[in-house]
Amino acid sequence: MGGGPMHAQAPRSWTLDDFEIGKPLGKGQFGSVYLAREKKTKYIVGLKVLFKSQLVKNRVEHQLRREIEIQSHLRHPNILRLFGYFYDDTRIFLILEYAARGELYKQLCGHQFDEPRAATYVASLAHSLNYCHSKHVIHRDLKPENILIGLNGDLKIADFGWSVHAPRNRRTTLCGTLDYLPPEMVEGKSHDHTVDVWALGILAYEFLIGTPPFETDSRQATFRKISSVDLCIPSTISRNAADLIGRLLVKDPAERLALKDVLRHPWILEHASDTLASLERRKS
Ligand code: AMP
Image (cartoon, rainbow, N blue to C red; front, side, top):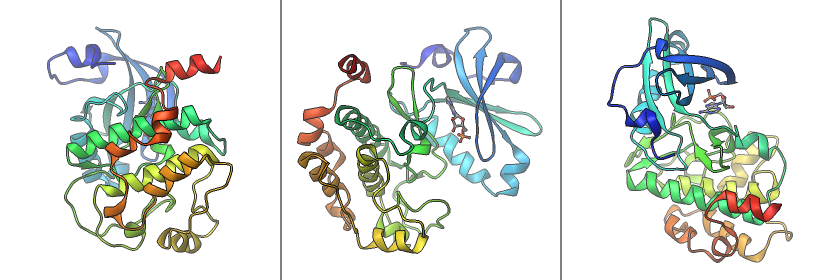
């Protein structure tokens, strides 16, 4: 989308009056997201409304500050743009790029993607994560719930609430699902940018199989499976896809495939298309 009219404007302070508010797009943990249109330019955005009281109660103000700081400086077609923010007495508003096709999570939900779609997604994620890492940003929370889909079908990585500026070697408290976390994180050891490479391996598996590889109904069992990389790749998966997944889900962080090499891997070269538009054409 190359910036668009929102980007063309000089940095300015926005207010709620600058926007016409449309339908709700979804509800998150700390507030809601609405379709909105900037009155002057008619530019469509997603307006995220967060309640200050809830942010304070859950002690996530610092996380939001970091998310704004990091996401507003990233410019990549597969990373959701954060155009700006403003606030009133009770709320904080984030002006986000509108992702017209919603959540990747909803498309996945136990379904499998064919190889062209899975490989195109993996390539776009590898490219955008490589861009983040070149800016010393680690996402650390890559999972289908945090990935949106744009109008053209391209993935948009969102939710930088857990991201950090590297290097940062500290223990983290683990809330939520363990499924996308690497051994060094579930074991509470220090970690680096290769945590995103591991998560990409989990996603590649999930795109092709429908569920993440270490999913169980108990946290302890998932912990053990991750820690021992108890990986079972079904024989329905093509040899090249299995090879790529095996090179991403490696216990030793230093031995995981570099993201630039993901883009050169035979499975990606064979199946990924430059745009999802050409993929759509192939389907019809
Ligand atoms: P969140 O609070 O970020 O978890 O957002 C809640 C829900 O709103 C998401 O799960 C999406 O379905 C939807 N949503 C959030 N941001 C956008 C956006 N920029 N474009 C379209 N839908 C969005």
